[in-house]
Length: 175
Length: 264
Image (cartoon, rainbow over all chains, first blue to last red; front, side):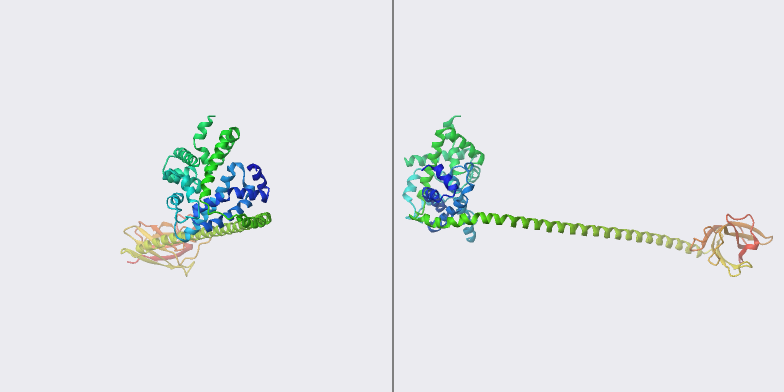
């Protein structure tokens, strides 16, 4: 099934098309939420809430927002970060941890058996910490190029070239 | 355009991450439509991210969509009603708030004006009181100076008694010989009729020689009825006559109101 066609039908509130999109992306969206929350059960609940939200916002998607996946990725990140903020507020922790993905990669015992640790490690094999950190900021935390440059104290041009080489390494690991 | 360089720049990785501005997004989409290499590169990048995010998923059950599906109908029916209902409330609240604000502002404006008027009135009153105070102070100074003169050591006091034309009249002359000044206290004289004025005379008795030493000018308006005149003469008596305004060369004796001799 053609992706563009599915999206058009989804925007016309076609539940069949929406289910097809859910099947395509649900694991990814829940994976992103899980990296942020590090809580598999809560992540599943929030993930379902996020898809209900995506359904209710279907008319707001247009191509100026980028890829369809990028758009739902953004909704999921925001929901998870909001959740974490309200939770960390209760725990009186002010800042979001910026090293979620690095932590999961290096010490995934907490989530062992609940995520595909082997798959993750084989994808990130050979990647430097600063690469994993940059992937975390840009894909899992939704930082802009500018915000990532500020966070890592790196020139803004470096962010672009670095993410290119980091993602290329993952693509080599996939091959 | 150098498609290879564009792909190598890393902009497509940022595009998939959602890290670009809406303008940059449109630019990338424009090139993706124009160059199939760009489009396939975007898909390859997205695929790697999908692969990565799949590994961290808490592994969903096969029928996990059912829970989501159960909530979708509520979303469809609820939404349009909710958005219609919302708008007027926002409007009403906005208007109500605006009206309240306007009423409040008018109130403050009126109150402010009222206060300004009150301040002006108070300022005016303060000025008036200051004026009164200053006039009173001047009067006190004048009277003190006068009293000082009347109490001076060398003053000769002459009582002037009423004469035939006005037996109840009286006056006093305070004569400072050294300073050649005389102060006439005319409190006991009636107000002169219009067109007339009192004239004060210094008299030598043998032979009777009157010398005018001045008029009691503005008699009616002078509250203290005290008049300072210059008197360089060797006076033996003082007399006051009623004369036509401007005074006369010689006293009109029929109109002699008061007279008194200087004591030895």
